[in-house]
Length: 319
Image 1 (cartoon, rainbow, N blue to C red):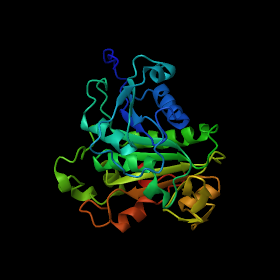
Image 2 (image 1 turned 45 degrees about the horizontal axis):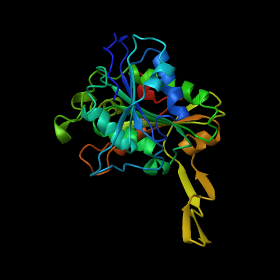
Image 3 (image 1 turned 180 degrees about the horizontal axis):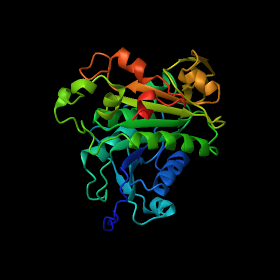
Image 4 (image 1 turned 30 degrees about the horizontal axis):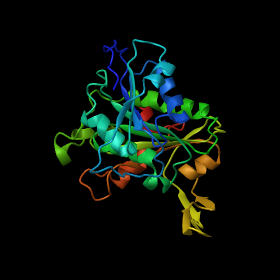
């Protein structure tokens, strides 16, 4: 493993953990961290070594995972030696990568970067509606939130990988708003009080408090033909028809999973409807199962998914 150089001076912006499920060399990840670095954010990248799409919250157990430093990627991105930038990969899943980053197994490599926000993406392909249950991108952000780190997952809502520019611009605007309100360190980071690591006092039921404590996260989708409009709202419905295909070959019978047709439903303002209209969808999502001690109530989630005049979550813009 490469020896790390001395820790450079931080520029005063909050540090960000970046991960994904498309792998450390994915164009969407490269585009995002390049922009974050150019804007002066200290960035710690810990991502899967290769593609881990649709891996959900799978973990690698009972098997050592190789860790690799990617100095070549760092050199291709770095424009300011004073802004900390570390790019690493883990030969595992997105959730593995987040756990490695947060639990401190890489302390000797992270150059003192202590993230106050996690951003997972930018994924190639939409993560709408029920997609969030399978998505490695969303699951990585959820894993970070479970550790009490405020988190955002972000996706290019189609497969035009030459068009990440709009998704980067839309995501950066949301990141800027989030970094204006996050606390360093996050108030429930690593859950020091277990299930009591949650908001308290008169602001405990505010969406802002739930986000800061990692009990609620943001899921962002941006089409490549983004019209410049933002819209915050709940999930719509998304149905996959004919999801399997069986073929007979000389080697035997094989089955392939992948929907032939996708049908979206959703009222105006839902993530599916917003994307079909060319807008950037933002959904405030619960992190925990509904009956968990740290779960967020329906009334808080409803308030959390109310748009301001610009389409951003009203609670994110009111600070």
